[in-house]
Image 1: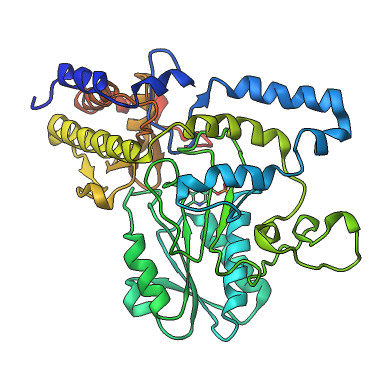
Image 2: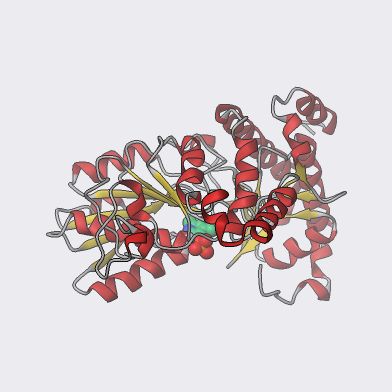
Length: 406
Ligand SMILES: *Cc1c(COP(=O)(O)O)cnc(C)c1O
């Protein structure tokens, strides 16, 4: 083989991020390649969560002031901002990505009232599409245009374009700078979904109009951790979002009968933050504060390239087809292959200790979280995949039945 396991062990020894693996709880003897679905748990998350529970029992309602619970959406937003190339006062953390999509799209539509078209692509994560469909239906008079190519779809009736930087299924990545410039040249607003970018790439939202994303994938914020919404400063104070809950009011504790929008990013909050869910996220951000994103991206490119190389070499005869781009610039931190029996293959692989996941109809998805995945893991995973395919271990009856979460 071109690259041996010993070569990989040597790469691990030279890895400038190697010390970070020890910050996470990782399953013994397993290779976790689903960090793009749910990131691993920071060791500090348990104590951080316990601390909030203690604050609750000790301070009761006083915790809103004394423990900073009230300010969490914005204090956490400021901590997250550098990870997506944003500045302070530009990011709010709360709710879920789906809700953030409604906030961003509704705000964009309000800024372009004379335009009635929303562009999305068919490959986008379904909830992004579903939320836009629901919003368009509720507002009335909007058309959703699904793009083949952006050039065909962009016209002077387009209000905004909502795309995911990295495709959750294929791992392919848009050239965000180029697309953003094209969209804005057509007079429309650009909204990026960064769910599969934040924590994996050097994201730069500074030219985008809005951005949204989750924190439970590469950012390791924990199951159901709150989402983020970014608003370009040129729109702050102007854009209005649809979900005008009391936290977006200029003075929530004035308890006025009518909504009066807050200035700044607070206008993009909805309501009471899920305080407990911010604890593990902030524990993860403690780690991110010490991480150089250029090193994260360089390692991500190296890990994904290695996996493609070794898996293709070992699995060539077994009907495995690369779906992700071969060009690392055009790829996120994930590698997808297709195989006609993708689902049982992923199950059989999990039984051998290698956790990827499956996305219908036939995609095997492997996420490489650079903070805790080693080059030797990548090599071992590719060898296991070749064994599962070569020995047809996936044919076992127990791997055929679909579980609820794939
Ligand atoms: C993971 C993901 C979501 C998840 O949305 P939730 O509201 O957190 O359930 C949305 N969009 C994309 C592109 C995703 O990858």
